[in-house]
Image 1 (cartoon, rainbow, N blue to C red):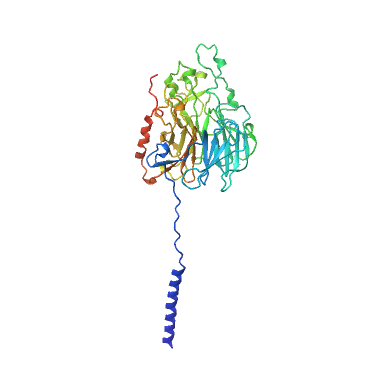
Image 2: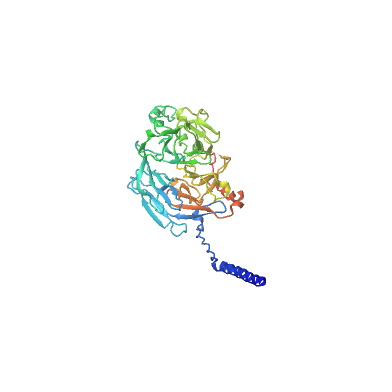
Length: 473
């Protein structure tokens, strides 16, 4: 009997193991094939751009027409602020539907009146698309899977003063509900030619105190969500800032940064103190870290990159040697007249590690360095260490000019304008003349990146539109 029970137990056990094995094999689901989405490849010529070794670029769109800043949504949709002076539909949205990196849907939108060709801003913040005309800051709600924002644009801030030069409304957000808006000044040094008439020295004089500083030449802080605000509803955050077209909030140190256009015409306004060469290399464009209450000295001063000092402007008694005290200095001097028109702190991981938290600057290019070649027309990179710029700048993207020497601005084929970062860490660059947009990615091994890959870009600094002119005039 015991022997019989043992045989039954053994049979059941074997059957059970067999059934377990059979069930496992039968029920085992086939492996789901890994679907790898097609990754767009760079254009063979990088869309005409010259980049550090290992980087590649493709052209998203070739010619939207004159345009300004750009923004890229998390799904890859691109929004562009058009440089349109009249009518409506001053924005354009782009979508890539077949994942080849090229825009194949283009749709204009913008139910608001265009009011000037310096309408600039395009930002995505907390589910809204923020944009500006020259006089008004708007926002419009973005909806999932919808290319065009929904509803009518909300009016957030209105500039009630007449149209003027440098009328761009550039934006930055502090992630605490604060929105920073630029109100740039239209003159070089608040010059008043009525004060110059009859002056034997021939020096152009500036108004003192400069009335423009009451409402211009500064950055104001507003509520990012409150409709129908005016300048009086905001707080003057900083003053003495001539013209800012590139501004960004740096999340690494929770601070506002901007790049300022330095003034022009030192030689024209005071030829006995400034040569034509000095007119071309002075003053510095300023990379500024801005704290509430800062005064950067416009129009009474300019920043000298050779002395690394803020100097008294000739319109207010300066002679190229008198230092100005009591004003905030930039954290870094940038080449004169390069026209920095956008600023972006890189957050992504697609580029090599050295780029993370550094700053990209789009230099729109000079218009008035005659008799020397015009300069700028590049995208530069400023490395950061321990939360501060190292003081060096690199040529990151070149090839925009299309010519070796830019005698006048019109000679340049493209002028770098806007910067934006995609959700994948790609860098987008726009230009203002034809409306061309590039997408730049790193194609190599991030961990193996070395400074040797930058040597070719360092050699680009010998180009006439990048290097400092020789002191001959």
